[in-house]
Length: 321
Image (cartoon, rainbow, N blue to C red; front, side, top):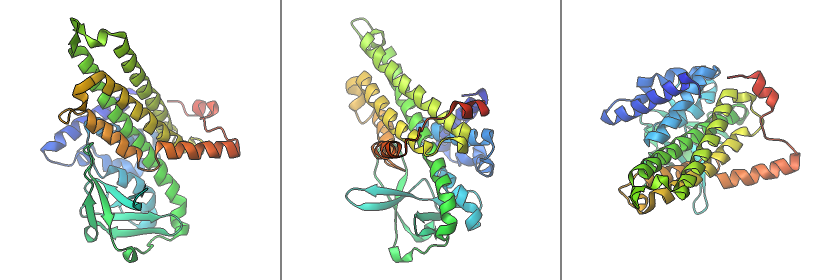
């Protein structure tokens, strides 16, 4: 990550911490002004760094829905921030559910139904039922009469921009998972330096060092893949956003499991923050395709098409940092 990107990440973390005292951190960061400029690499890197900061700080905003709705603005006539995309989530027990993240009061909701088009609904006219989840994620299920939904954007207009919205959404969720994984790793490292056994910090023991090294490796691998995808944007290979999202779900879970071993009994307590980071990773993995679902689908696709999902070296050379 370049210095300018690190500076925006640090600024985003500070703004999210300060938001607990009031104010909109997205306004303070000028984040809404970045959305129309996502074709510019620097603006895109800055806009998506917000999600990594949200994971680290266990914060939630309407940014994910706003980012996914951005490609639809041209066909709906809305302005950045006024339209928030919902996320379709499959529940094994309750079939398809529609959820939205963050505070969406006074905004319009974009409810996209592949094959049928997309509909715009006033958020104040639907019931938003909060989901009781750890991870400090403000997630609401959208409850509305199915007959009240009408396609305000025809499928022929929605289809070309839908993929772009999913691409941006998966990158954002992967970065949020990365931030949460880094958050729990920081807790484990601090604990390993402070907790003593046999007269020395447990971080001196080889078994603990191995756990922390594996967790750090998973974070670095995910960071490298995410930063490359954000940098290359539409120059990435087909379905690369699915590859990144699958990697994020797998690595995020592994980091949480390994850091829990380091933390020991204290990590299981409700007072400790580990369960918030862990629950956040699990909840975000369930959005826009789980790691298990995407891995299975990608494996089938690679086997049938003989397509190499890796980024070609020529593409990396043509798009230097």
